Image 1 (cartoon, rainbow, N blue to C red):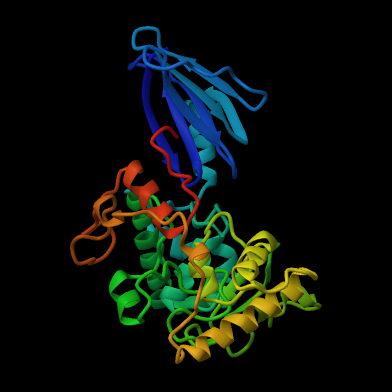
Image 2 (cartoon, one colour):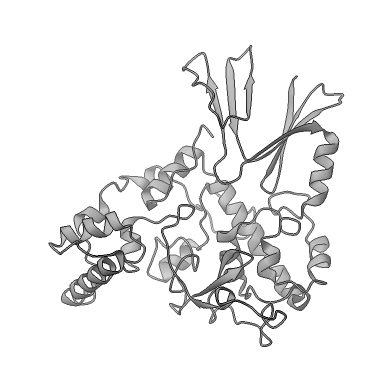
Length: 372
């Protein structure tokens, strides 16, 4: 059947096949965390065999194109499948038909926190955990404020930054939330995110807090995002567990928002893998024995000592910390080339090659590929 169009609603793709006059067959796809839709040109390359995770194979005889899809969800239906699923989803900040007024009318009545609502695809369709942390930070809104207490002005700030950051991620192929001008003003031009998976706030350097919210880690800077006086979501909940109580952030090596080794070293040794800790210790002629906590403590002490010896000029990392950094990255990437004036304005679109190069230069996973 001929392919007609594809629509994205949040994290869902809908592909339409059939005659232009209809009826159309609809393929619904949700990639999950590790889905891939690969396209091969059989006239120019050898098409790999399908695997146990391949859910759909498409072939186009005239062009020689072959497509392999692996995803968490692959459903086949008619146009009712699309209309039913779309009706169950909330407002997608990347779609032109998103209606902030309809969304506010729903949020404004709810005794649920804005942090929980931002992750509920029936309300905000698209954002994930990293975006939740960064959207609410930029909006200056604490995650525990209830929807019914949010008010229109704060809701508008949340919606603005939801649209703004997801648009930026869409056109640049990376989760970048810090405005380049502010990053430069803060003295950290390579700063990519403000508070996600960070012990200190990228803006005020205050201590970031984290806690469990619906089995996902929630982040906030109490100084930049004042918590509600009545406790918000906590004030409305009895018997909360220790995990649901705000506390110090326990940083980890993130695969979704990874950082280069040199960037992680500026935050101390906690974010390093055991293999990286041992490599850094060997480079400093220090012992590599003991558990991870011992290695972290030993490397942190060495970094502190080196920093003091150099007059506080920052982390003194060995050459190993910079191996593999991309050269001439400025020639291979395009950031905001014009002054960023809001959603969909002043945005420099980045192709997948440039996005992958930018990620490589920052030490992040190059999940963006011209073939996926």
